[in-house]
Length: 172
Image (cartoon, rainbow, N blue to C red; front, side, top):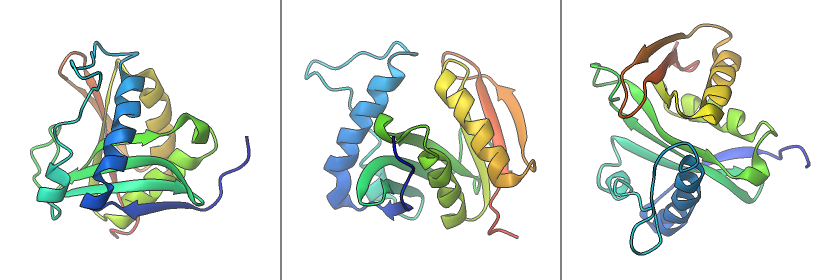
């Protein structure tokens, strides 16, 4: 597999909703390996909160990740986190890189771009049932912050969450 090209985050608009809905199906399919997620009667997992990103653009942020011209994944972020009482904290709600683009640095670069484009205090929640996420996020955060981050464990829906806290570099 070749090295990544220029990694970009493209702010998604409502016209990208079909693209994101399709990518969310792949993302949830990947998560179904670790969690008891079943498809609906229509054969799709669905993601009920996607419309919120167009209804609340000042609080919810959807991005398409590109590796050069190729679609490589998506990032969904929002203001406010279920892991914090701070209403201004930014939260990585969902993050996905297509398998073709994994292990090339695409995800790490995209996460760094996300934190830079939305300056502030961030939280990244990872279920202890998600081994891929647990391997990815601490390394991405460490590289971005050069060690200036914290971690705690909190109760989650089915399993505990590891919650990582960091501050954007552009929020000096």
